Length: 180
Image 1: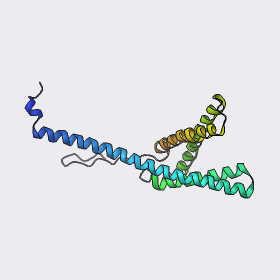
Image 2: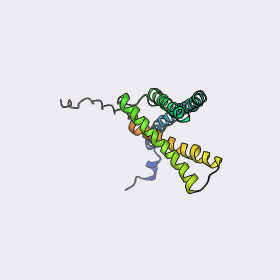
Image 3: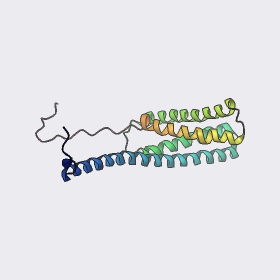
Image 4: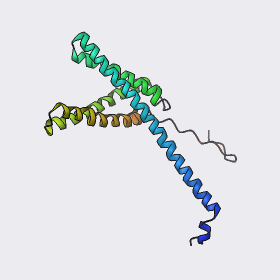
């Protein structure tokens, strides 16, 4: 049986509702605020790595005249910078599971992100027959890069930079001692 209408208007009930709403809003803010901060840092680290990749590629290409070697070196350097930036800044509060494991997964997942961008380009260029430079750039560097970046952010958080372990709950007075 629902309480009489007057009870719904009571100050105590209003405080309980307000406290519940504030607590829920605080949880959402804490959860999304942390995610937004990670996303912004991830974008900044990625931007720096992108500039290093493009800049180093062009310097090496100019010096050596070897496009494949230049791109390989610039990609490895940029990926290493991205790993370091994400490890020490973007995901610094996450658990550490060893540089070898993290870097290997980071590099492999970066390759999957590249495959996503290439897949977008293949679909646009070869299946849809959109063969102009603008269409290729939109497919590879807007759609493909966007989808690849979203995949990288998700996969790095999920597989490379693991969530920190949950703290053990504190004992409340009167609780029995935990088993040994």
